[in-house]
Amino acid sequence: MKKFAVLGCGVVGSGVVELFEKNKALIEKRCGQTLEMGYILDLRDFPDRPYANLLVKSIDPILADPDVAVVAECMGGIEPAFTFVKSCLEAGKSVATSNKELVAAKGDILLQTAKEHDCNFFFEASVGGAIPIIRPLHKCLAANDFSAIAGILNGTTNFILNKMIKENMDFETALALAQEKGYAEKDPTADVDGHDACRKICILSSLAFGKHVYPESVHTQGIRNVALKDVELCNQLGYSIKLIARVQRLENGKILPTVMPMAVEEDNLLSQVNGVYNAVMVRGDGISKAMFYGRGAGKLPTASAVLGDMIEEVQLDHTIPSQTWVNVGNTDFIEDFSAFSAKRYFRTTTADVHTLTEIFGELENRTVSTEDDETVFIVSASMNAADVDRAVKALAAKNIQVLAQYPVLVS
Ligand code: HSE
Image 1 (cartoon, rainbow, N blue to C red):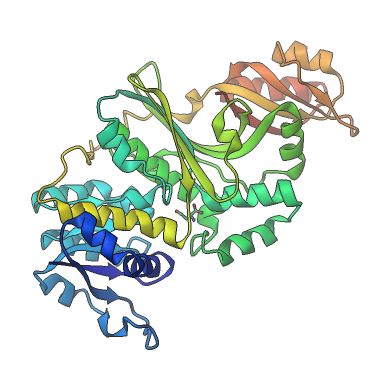
Image 2: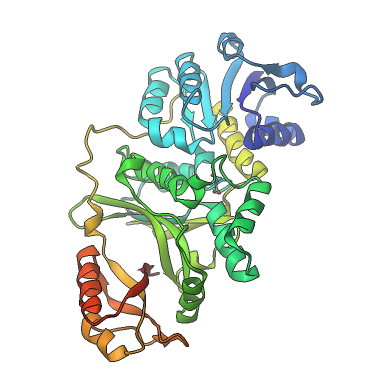
């Protein structure tokens, strides 16, 4: 018999409790032994819940109980989660977390602590909710040299963009609905401004390339300034604007992680990912590409990933060597954002396509001129930030403004 504890009984923590209670028999069968819920740590009281007798307000009884083999950390935030998780690992108790902020900021330290104490720091639930992506990256795909990962990693923003396009819902109403459904972070600016997706691409980049990528190293831009007009016009050109978290390995061997709204080509499966669903596209030399898809947020989908990690821990008696990365003490392996280069979508205040062609070179033949004498188009060649600057200045000299521009994600 082994026991587990749950830290934090909010949306995800209560989901772990609920899904465990519902599927206890089959979970135990898959564990190969009995598993008991021993403790739930929360500062709040839940007198009416059936598990009220398991509630504790201190980590100490959990640390002191030798039968607790694994701890589900679902508190969110850095502190006190970091202190609690580190103490659990130092006591030889494995941890399964859904807390991407913690993994992105402290994953290197916690993985090292787990290794030193013969246990595991699991974080499948920290990226993509229900989608298995952490374990596939370091196990099923472990034979690959990875070249890129691109994904829709934030359910809230994808849900909001979708509601805006399909139901003409305004931004605030769509955000309130996402919060009501338990998708959004405590502070929804983390979703809307791209920080949540940034933490997730940090985790995937660190695991795929073996070096800790911190959020400060990632160019991050959210969806706050995405205009409905561009979403609609971009659709007419055959592209969908999505918040894309991405890391590419460049020819110089450095990696370039980014989070920003991109115009996704309709041939790219990511353009078809709607609502709260997430998807991750992985490129590697053995597989070419593989796509992972599922519910990226919500109570039971995230709890499913936490419990999956806990079940693996109950079956194990060692630290998994492939599930790790290190802090190399510098960011020399990360390329500066100025090197980012892509085809681009533009909306400009002119109907004069000839002038646009003179400045940008070849345009894709799906160019559309609007009733407001604006033109939306896709530039065929890749442009970096300096190329965009030059084009904007050349247009300004002719009294033409760029009203919006998005990089394109090709298939
Ligand atoms: N706020 C996150 C999202 C929850 O919307 O994707 C899952 O990490």
